Each structure stands twice: as C-alpha cells, then as structure tokens.
Image (cartoon, rainbow, N blue to C red; front, side):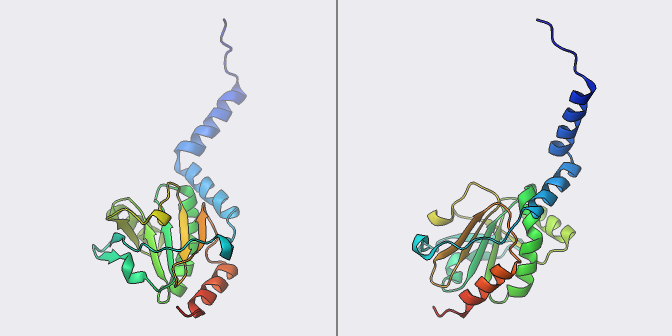
Length: 188
C-alpha cells in the first residue's frame, strides 16, 4: 500500500491545529471563544434544588490562613473550582473578579484550585484580579464534588444550591447581580 504524500493544505491545517492546541496563541483564542459564548448562569428550579447539610470542609488560602466552610453557614456562598491552565476558567475569571469587587463584603467567595498557592497568586496578580484562591485541605462535601473545570455553585443562606454551573459563564451579569441581591435580602 502506497502512503500518499501530504499536500500543502494538509500541512497548513495540521500547523493551525498544533498552534491552537499547544501555544499561548491557542490559549488566547480559546479564552476569547469562551467569553464570546459565556452567558448569565441559570437558576435551578426550586423543586429541583438540593440542600447542603454537610459544611465539613477545610481549605487554606494563598496567605496560609485556614478556612472552615462551617464559618460560612447561614451566608450566601459562591464556590468556584478553577485552574490557571484551564481556558474556560480563565475566560470567566474576569467576570468573577468584577462580581467579587462589588460583593466581597456580603458574599463568601471561595475560588478553589488544586494548584500551588504561588502559581495561583502569580496568575491573579499578573491579571490584576482582587480575588484570592484557596486550596482544599480535606475532601469537599458530597454535593460539592466535581470533576469538571470550571464548576461554580451559588448557595443561599439556608444551604440550598441555587446555581450549579459547569463551564464558563458571565457571572457579572445583571441577572446574577439581581439574584445575589435577592438572596442577600432573604432572612435565614
């Protein structure tokens, strides 16, 4: 069997694929594409929501301070799993940072990465983001387990998971802000 000689268009196509997959240009393009398709996350219907009852979860911040999820019980919580190498995570970080800047005194934000604190700190500083990252010290509660990045949970004061979003989203949208304001206004 004779193997055909690759033609010029095949080599160009292969080169484009390699650039897209293995270079910073490819990462940039993937981030921009994810921003383009990022929409406001959808609320879970009230009848389909699950309540978080297990708040037993230990985390450590970039500054070395420990955080126990039990401290957040009774508050509105936004938990985001992310990584510095994940294009959809990078795409939504801009939106999350904007939301964080306006709600950091009202909402508990937990940006969770398994990467070393020096890596996440350098990434966030380079981008000029105010938000900080935490690392898990113990396994998350069952309802907060995920294998996908990014995954974000919005939890109300009573522990109900109001949003579970996998993939990038526009977290700084008017809809999300309105929802946060409503959740913050509710009594425990």
